[in-house]
Length: 504
Ligand code: XMP
Image 1 (cartoon, rainbow, N blue to C red):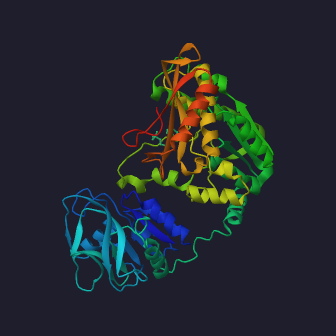
Image 2 (cartoon, rainbow, N blue to C red):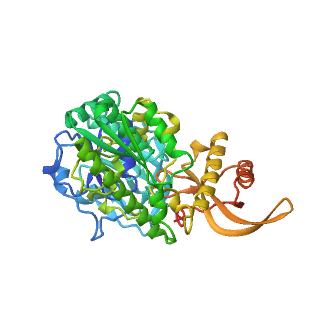
């Protein structure tokens, strides 16, 4: 296993994912890990990049005894500067942070084997390593500054091999995997059987409850559990009334097709609707929806727990959910607060998280192997509060119906025109402001529908999708013609930041 120590880089997860893609087990740990906490199966350590300078008083703590371990260690960007600094090299503080592509000169080295004498790499740094102590060998140069070094088991690169802009970055990571003998430690072939065996071993004959939403994570988690303990699994789906058009019945259908023995659907929409009456403040809406969801789930679970003697609560938690909220991310600058709800501790059930070590793309590929259809696995993300945060202002039945219809047309058209899969997230939102229009000979006074479509890697930053004009025209004309109550459609062309993806 390769440990990736997190110094707060936005790329820490990317390093880990890339290593796994190349067949090496990689796990993220906090930067201040002690040598005594190192898992016995560790074969290599990577020190990530990060926003700090080695000269900052507040720079992340690191136990320098780690550098004396007899384990290959690779520093990337901040990690490169840190190894150099702690080894007595000269690191010059930069005045500005430099981003972007650079040409660097490569020398002969174990880590950079197979690279060209001149390589295009991605930089994102401020400090520079300008000279090295005795014993260190320069392996790459950018002008006068040291872009790479090596000294026995210590390696450093100033650039980011994990990002695609570094043309031969994969080769660098592959070489490190080889240097640390970590090949084939992340075995994708037997994963499903291993996970099923682990679930069986842990659960034995007990009953398990899982809340499902129709989203990818809970679907794959429940499909996996279904393979392992079919008769002992109870899936609970709560229809808040704030789902997309037809979604509640689609979810029920897929669970039926997949032969789930106990799929229980609860229509709680009337309660949600009542609780949201007259509420216009976005934060208040989120809170009401979140709390009511938990309360409803708790109530159902308590009844089931008594009746079916449930012992476990399974959740579709995936690796980034777990790591984002763990101490390893204390070094990262907070960009987005956590939206997801955690289900109640009060239930006193043992937690089971079969997907806790996987990234989204890995979860999708597990889902594929479990026979789940592409249309479910490749769905766009959908927020917990659902359409509740896509109707600005008060949620009325009328507005909800208008939005559901408009959104369904939008998504249907994107799929028809083969645009859906190249977009990270697309949806319609309703602006409860009426504007004047004309239909036939009549003057109309109706709502505005705004269309949002973004490209993104993880939702932290996003660009608006450049949907072709003709496709937009078709979507707009279908919405105003087919949805009563709308006479104007607008397309949102703002990036995140400064906007967010959702409207509330
Ligand atoms: P924003 O609007 O913050 O959204 O740019 C980023 C991503 O998070 C999703 N999102 C949520 N997901 N509960 C969720 O489960 C929420 O309250 C929530 N708010 C936003 C949003 O859909 C986008 O994918």
